[in-house]
Image (cartoon, rainbow, N blue to C red; front, side, top):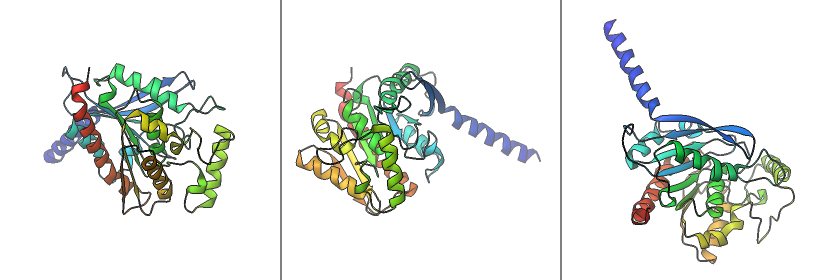
Amino acid sequence: MKFLKLTVLICLININLLQAKTDTIEVFSKAMNKSLKASVVKPSGIEGLDQEFPSVYVLHGAWGGYLDWHKNATKPNLLQELADLYQMILITPGVAPFSYYYDSPLMDSVQYETYISKELIPYVDANFPTIKDKNARAITGLSMGGHGAMMIAAKHPELFSAAGSMSGVMNIDVRTWIGNEDTQEQRRKSQQEMLGEIEYDFPFSPYTAVGLVNQMKQNNIALLIDCGIDDFLIETNRQLHQLLLENDTPHEYTERPGAHTWEYWTDALPFHILFINQVFEKNKTQLN
């Protein structure tokens, strides 16, 4: 009985230590007049240290939330392990379903580009020991979050030195998606509600990642794009890749076995964090 009590006590201590490394924050958005939650994963044992760390914003997909990467990754404690390995702070924001992280010209409740770039990042920098410099800040995400990461980085090069996409919606035009016509029609209707009538054909709307390739070229942000060959969004990724090749934008592009699954994203995130860390290492001489 004493052994059982001791085991339970040790487990509780370990759980509390783990929880202490991850904070849940709630940030009020003036742009949308509402509060949104995010998770902040810190390297172990940094409390009391006079040190600042690089930061990476890791975005979720449609139907998701700020805890997606914590609950659904197929490897337990994946974010904490990466934060510890690379000594960086990982932030997982939550946004509304199917918002694609853009600012709607029609709906005040959908202003997520502004929220991430002008409200969340300043809040995190003010309340956590981050390096307040684009050379030590990056953004990546899965599916809808991949679109958000590429779009926000393209529009805000002053904030990021690297951006990535895993199975990203690189073109919100549902005609470029494979299969599931009912879902596609639902997405098209929600886009019209939030954006109105936009240009889906070349040269594309600035509300979609493929419409921002000129900004991507000008910004000199390190880009990593990957997608599974069985993913229903593979053609949108190939389209962006081709456009970046045509305008001579340096980027890393990978296709590998896999579909639109958490198994794929769990395997992909460590490669994204490795890529981002390499960018951070190169940037150290440029930090203020």
